[in-house]
Image (tube, rainbow over all chains, first blue to last red; front, side, top):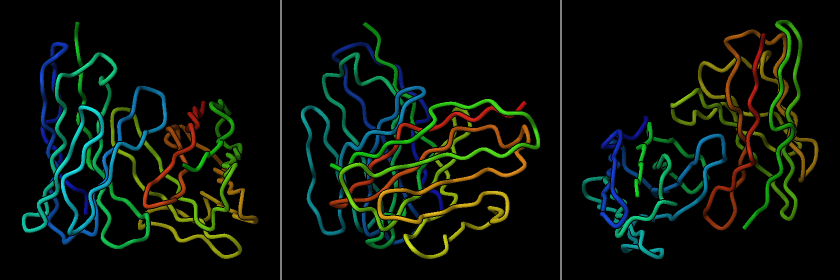
Length: 110
Length: 113
C-alpha cells in the first residue's frame, strides 16, 4: 500500500526550513528518502530502519516513529540545490522492494 | 555505492514496435533488479522484480507478455516493451539494492507515436 506524503508541494526562500512527512498504514521495516530532479534518476538521501535512531546528512535529517509508522524529513537552512521532488519509499521486509509515496515538490527560491 | 547504467536515455518509436531497455550493474553483481515506471509528475511504480537466472516477478496489473524482462547475467537486466502503444509512453527506470540502499539507473524516456 502506497505511503501518504505531505505536503504535496512546498515553496521556500533560500535559508528557510521545511518538513516533509510520510506515513504508512502497514508495519514497516524501513523508510527510505530520495530526491529526484526533473528528468533524472532519484538519488538516495537516507534510510531509517525499524528500531533505528534519527539520522542526519549535512543539513538534512530524518526520523522514524515506529509506533505511528511515520517518518519525517527535515530540511534546514535550505539551499537552491535542495529543489526537487522528494519521495519516501517504504519497505516491509529487508528485500529492497520499495513502495514510493506520491512525492513532495520542493522549490527553493533565491 | 552501486553504479547502474541504463540505456538508452530516451527513445521514440512507432506504435506497434518493440523497444528494449538495458540496465547494467557496472561494479556490483546484481542478483536482483527492480523495474519502475513513472508517469509525469507521479510516483515511481514498481513493475517487476528481475532475478538473475530465473523468471521475473511481476506486480499486480502488469502484463508479463507486454513487458518482457530478462536477467541473463549478474550485470545485465533488460526490459522489452512489446507492441508499444502511446499509453506506454513513460519514464522507465531500473534499480538495484546494495548496502540497504537502492541505486537507480538514469532512466529511459519512452515516447510512442
